[in-house]
Length: 122
Image (tube, rainbow, N blue to C red; front, side):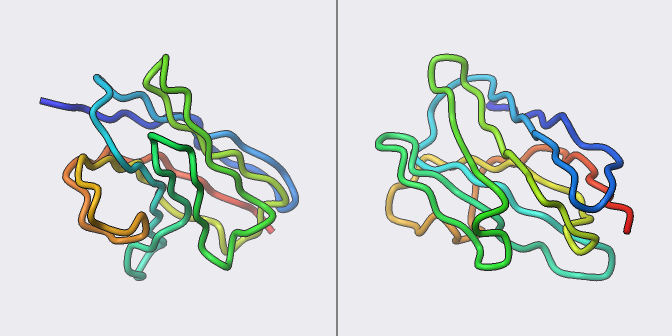
């Protein structure tokens, strides 16, 4: 059973930075991504990566402020967050999937973490 575990969330002032981490119990994924869900909103795609060749994809709302990266040797996924805004406040989830046919922003991921809370104060 593959497990994903997020960490690094917290309370930060607007304009600040955070780095989220996701530890995978083993490396089997072809695509990995970060999604987030704010209170009373649907879960949304934030950033994703094709693990084999490192291509990255971002939601328009986070381009130029957030960066996704992966350390395949350590089975780690990261989300580097800068210039945070109040509207970035959400529960952030790491997701992984073995299938290669789906787009990275397709929410049909087989494996999900429990989430880490990011709260941005205005």
